[in-house]
Image: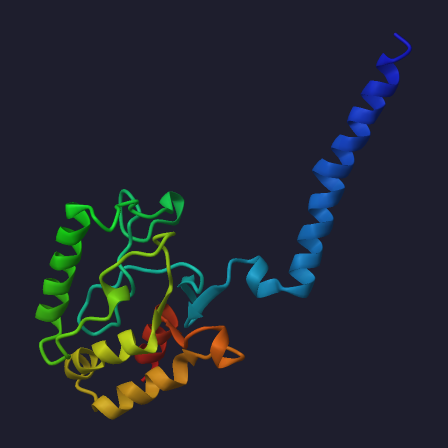
Amino acid sequence: MSQLRPAILLLLLLTLVTGVVYPFLTTSLAQWLFPAQANGSLLEEDGVVRGSALIGQNFTQPGYFWGRPSATSDKPDNPLASGGSNLAASNPALDKAVAERVAALRAANPQAPAAVPVELVTTSASGLDPDISTDAALWQAPRIAASRKLPLAQVEALIDQQTHRPLMPFLGSPTVNVLQLNMALNDL
């Protein structure tokens, strides 16, 4: 009985510290230091939340840029079912899926070069990648310009404005966030 009381007090103390104080402290610090990130990096357009800068969205209309295909289970870009397809490079199902995606992209982008950027036909590891390379965005630019009746140079300039460049060129490749690019497209 003499050990039961300290054990219960220690349980209550640790529950208070790890279950109340620590979460309150970390949440408060995150809200104070990084409010946008702490709230999900949400992107708003006209006061309406359009999505998160960290999670890809499934754009299929010809007037919008398309991101990477998603391998999430029940519907594309479902953040509750994140994960890759786990198909090996030697798997015939992967070859078939890539061939179908290439054919669909070439049909939707007849004025684009024949070589389709690889990230437009392969999924990312998470299935939720929000970014594409500038090459993939520029490859889609003729379709966007034709669909929206905009000069190609204006669409290419918008891609350049929305490009995120690494601090040093050897640290990565320039990328474009598809949701932010499409929101900027809507603002034109």
